[in-house]
Amino acid sequence: MGHESKWMKRLVTLCVFVLLLSACALDCGGDNKKRTGMDQWQERQDQWQGNAIRNYLLIYTQSCFCEPQTNEVTVSNGAIARVIVKDFQGNVIREAADTEFSQYRTIDGFFALLRDIDKTADELSVIYDAALGYPKQIDVDPYATRCDCRGQCSGVVDDEYGYRLSVMPTS
Image 1: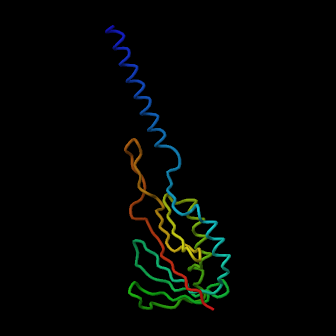
Image 2: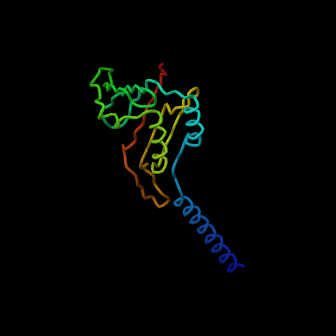
Image 3: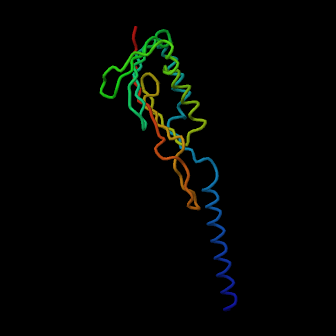
């Protein structure tokens, strides 16, 4: 019986080892991207477009490890008509020239940005305005720091960024 008992212990140990390796392999493979709110992307874009708001003031702030600024974008007939750039205290820094408008976004531009970010970013979280459907909060971590089952970590620290948006329809 002593010989069978040793054999049984070895078999159980081997089974446990194989199960742990399998669990580790499952944990290490696959898509670890985290998404919140992107399941509503198309529905919310349709809601925004269904509201047919072509004239509005879009105020958005980008948060990152950079100098914070607020952009006040006046949209007329769906196109950018004016951009005022303010510092974090609300002081006007400058008014953007027409030739710079391509550097700024409309709400349709933010929906396009979300579609592009969704393809590449490790983590993406979006909160939408319930009444109008536009994304009012976007948080992105392009290269999230992750550690795998072997204890190896990858990613970039302090590359996160986000946007806070508000829209005021105008006539």
